[in-house]
Image (cartoon, rainbow, N blue to C red; front, top):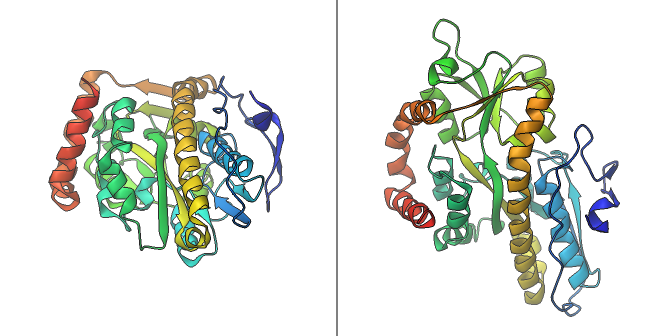
Length: 357
């Protein structure tokens, strides 16, 4: 990998971190694309503080570093980006509020945390809507998705680009899960599953017979360690880089929701930038988002295999088992499709169908 990723990274307000996972080796990841384009003229200096939820070993962090490198190189150092990983500055909801007040410049939340600003984004939370990564990327790069980003205008938030959080998978410390009955427990209590503060996610796990428990991501490891919740749902890469395998014995590849990330900038910060800088920030965001999607894809299956090597019992569902989960969550569509917008869902389904042809 190139020197930028091998070098030690100093984060403001944080300890000095060395690239690479503290508790697991990294897969062979693609190098970031070469930075191309002319240096933009001098329109002042900006130091951008960016808070993210995931660890410094995550695709989210690595692509954020690449975003900063693009800006630094193409402004001769006049724009720099300091990245704060591991929810140091708060959870997604808290950091979005900080962007609105101008006390933080950038964050990179899950789309699920943003539905209070743009309700249409709840479409991404519908279970089993996006059957493949190719379909998900086609939707994120569509005019439908751009309309969602544009809908943030005037909210205090500037939405720059979609990237990949990934397919959410279930992990827990109670029992193997291969069916909705295993979630509900039948003769024993249903699993208590940490979710985001998102009503569609809550509805999914209620339909499956679980006890969904909203909780900030930064509190999750200790909550699982102390038995406050049985489990959680996140992409394999997040489960690995957050060391959840230390407190979770079982994982199930449910792929029940595909969640994007959205790179966000404070509108106050955006408005202080010259138009030339604004154009460059948008370009850098899109380039780094494409790189993040690539890294996430490379990380995903590798992370699942690494979790198995570290002792997590992984259940991979066959088509019949998956169909049972899909049938169990149909009430979620009945409740939420009219509220999110049936025309919007139909547009997304059309893009999905076209991407598979």
